[in-house]
Image (tube, rainbow, N blue to C red; front, side, top):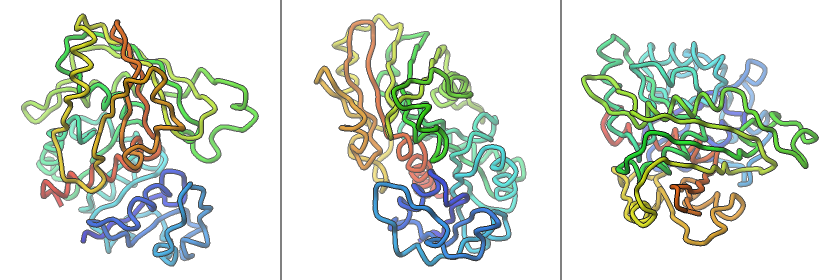
Length: 338
């Protein structure tokens, strides 16, 4: 078993990390960090558990540590659920101190020597770990993308053999993507908010890095453009998006690509049986019906039409956040980087 910790364990994504790691077959969760005011207290006494699954009692007696490298002496790998403005310095210090860092934060995603990984899409990009080590770093940082970017790139993975130059995407993003206190109730009830700060830029840039090619110890961005429009909608969990590709490939070829898709990895504990599920039904996928498919790790696709146009949907705090980081860590472990 590999001893692991969670940075920022009391927030929305931090709680998802705790849920996914509490009974993990490869990772032993030993350390939880939070703010100074929570340090020294039992996790069960400081966390306001708000997930739709029972609180993991086997974790409750872990005493919360302050968020710094000195608190992480007993672990080999840390999962970061820290806000971006805090994550940059803390994650850098952890990696320089010899720790492996799997980060959900945006701070390091676009740095040239740090992998931005969706295991079913670009597992070969983990080779950037060796580049970090060549630069003198004892540990390393691996990041997962923005929640919407994860859903879109997984939906695109089966059709990356098609010829296209432009992708247009319009998202309908759940309120949980803003954190527990992120969207006031009176602001989202009976409403759609047509703006999410920095979300469109993340989708437009991160996608090109993820779907780019790894050559000569660097990632060459994918040779297409992404145009995104992002919107907050009154849904609790599950990001839905409409995607348009400017390909001339027929619908039948694209559908066959979805149905025949096999990811380039296998055997990881958090990996779902289906990374991408294709629906023939005209009214699917839907967040309430489909977000928990594959224990929240499957991206569902449907409404494929001439154009090429289709709908993609995935659980934003599992597949799009904590689950993505855990799957990255499993891939890292399976490839002997730990």
